[in-house]
Amino acid sequence: MPDARNSRSTAKSGVSDDMVAKVGAAVGQVAMLRQEYTERVEAAQNDEEKEQLADQAQQAAVKCIRDQGISVSQYNEVVSAAEDNPELEAKLLSAARGMD
Image 1 (tube, one colour):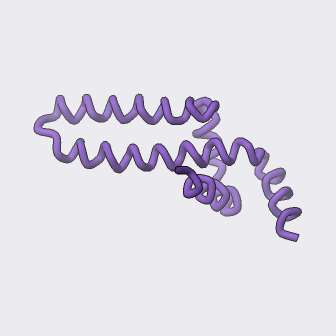
Image 2 (tube, helix red, strand yellow; image 1 turned 180 degrees about the horizontal axis):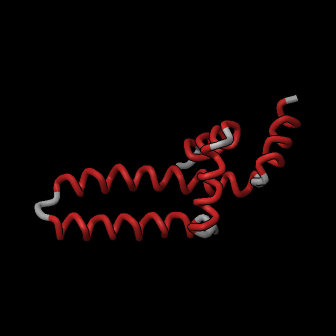
């Protein structure tokens, strides 16, 4: 029964399915931002412009996370937990891919 196993793994990780969905969506958005801003920083003409773009990227990432109804701390905790939990990591990646 895959559903039962998924319930247990969520309980085992201590992360609710709702939180996985929210963090996963934020992970997807932050990844897109990172790609966009990396290209912009590489094209920047000077260090000041690079610094401004890095600040903008950080602010945009925080907004994406908060727009999901979670704090940056919650986001970081779940992402960190996923690094040691392959099942949680797979759920986050699945949720990230599911975003539009």
